[in-house]
Image 1 (tube, helix red, strand yellow):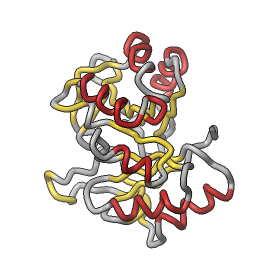
Image 2: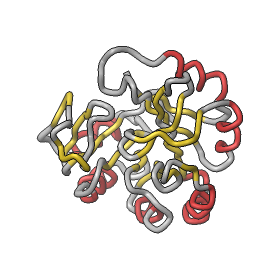
Image 3: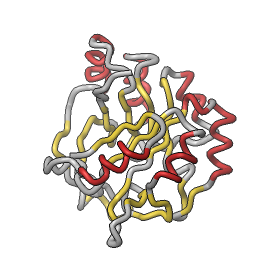
Image 4: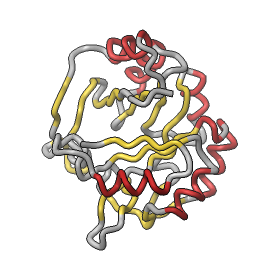
Length: 211
């Protein structure tokens, strides 16, 4: 597995880099801020990842209207990319069969601000823990804890990242994906506090993103 993980973020069927936390369809797209919008296809970006052997990259569907674009990327590099965005126990196997090496899941196991272990067990039954990446992207709360966030990184859940939580969840997935939302897309440096927390406490593979 590569130490460097490429990422193809998809919004309205196009490859984009969106500044963390500015995607909010509930309020329209007036708040949307991007660093990059490409007119090239998802396959255009997936192909050099395949050529250079960069495995474990991410294809992330940000909202509806991205299924075909995601499948295009998966077809360009079968077995080399993970797929996230709207994944649940009913559709996870479809993405695996389409070429995803693993599915990245957030909202299906975190909804209403709570962690739903039963949903995670359903997902394990559908594709196996070795095909599941848990997205534990987080923001720093006023009390200093790093809290998992959902709903386009707008809402805090009740789960704070720490040794016990990471140990428990590691038995239900092959790795963690953690975006440092406070610095994501802002080109202002990494969140060293979060990075140190993960380095010291994560018992399984952990991919840090942001900054």
